[in-house]
Length: 616
Picture 1 (tube, rainbow, N blue to C red):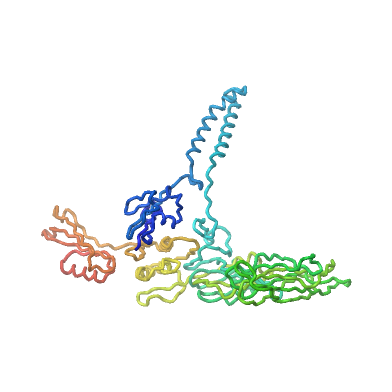
Picture 2 (spheres, one colour):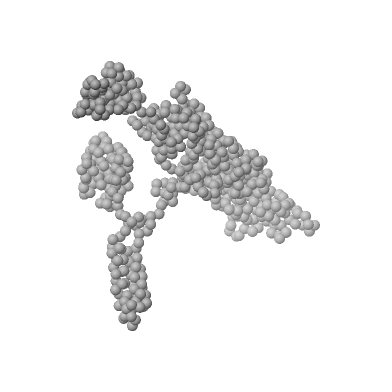
């Protein structure tokens, strides 16, 4: 037992702004409003409720049950005004403001005279301004001005300000992470600065620093023509490695799902000879991975900013050694310990250099959530000639498995830090890519994805894809698209664009079709496309010279039980007593509207043969 709920969000456009939903019968009108998030104290000023076209009084919302098959209409009427978030304009505030202005005009000269000045001098003007200012301050105190509504700052949620497109922008472009924003969809050939798919991280191998970045090229498959850093091909940088990851494949260049703890900021590991009384000497613990994630390995970076050395009397450097201990323990979702501390390692490092030393270590652990702490074990040489300091540089958690990125193409980049690269250039990676789309033909159907700039197959993809309208082939006019594709290819018309902001499917289809001087339409549940081009139309002229006065009649034959599943119509226009070549005879005109149905076409031809009518 269900009922239908029709919600009209804009009463001035009741057809285009309505949505229809089904609910279980038996729920009260008040219960329906509460389920929609409309509190009971808002009912008097809330939407208007109609059941069967009759308004429901507010007083019976709590007891009026919605019966089986009833149609409930919810109309949201405009409320308030003035654009303010605090309820718009306040009539009392307006009245008081006018009263203050009038009172200032009359009381100003009177106040000036009372103080011994003339009623028309500068003192009267100053008194008038003072009274107006004091009155305005009093009104603002009693009835504050409404605060302007601020858009939500959440990540793309309802009510948030629309994020600007990073592609079609006059601002300097670069790689960035756009949390909560749409994954780009690219059609045709385009130059893009791909978004970051994960937080970049870095580590040290053999004293060299490496940066790992994972980028999103876009949804679907792409033929990547060139990868560049700014305007220079990536092949000019020997220290950079790249990998194109097609949809459904895994990243093999590096581990993509790595979390870096933000709490680690170069804390110094205090030596036992410098630990204060009562302190255990541990730095931390710090949580390695967030809730609902599982780490299979932990990464530690340590830094010796002054190197390790002792400057002897001969002017050379003697070696020094540091040793530290790494411990970890499993924790639950609330951060509580579910195990004891386990020593992962007690590494040490010896050197005789005054250059900065950076080391990275990785330790495999049982899958889980962990917190980590570090402790220095050796005695620190505090002499001014010695460099014997060690700091905790970073904490990383290598999560188990690889995330499911969906049907998107990724770009993995591994960079080794050299004087050939800079912090800015590492975020200026761009790609020239062409979208791969399946192509349809009446003989062979859909092909494998191929690189194309076609308007027609971009239009079809927007209709079929999961990020589009998700329509079946039967609801797309593929024959017309194939015909127009040949026309556009001959003319050299292409569609090269990036959709990286939220919009409706129909708006996207309109933009795609516009590049081919066409518009999309919906006819009988089928999405079609019509191009603006010269058309050949059948013409038959009838006028007073060949039609007997009063003989014009029109008869419409509407679709019946024998009509095909397509919305087809055979219109019959009957003209009685048409004078042709001096003779008067009845003539019928048959017009076939929508020739998709083979049965209707055959019927049309038979009528033409049997009646001898003029056919359009």
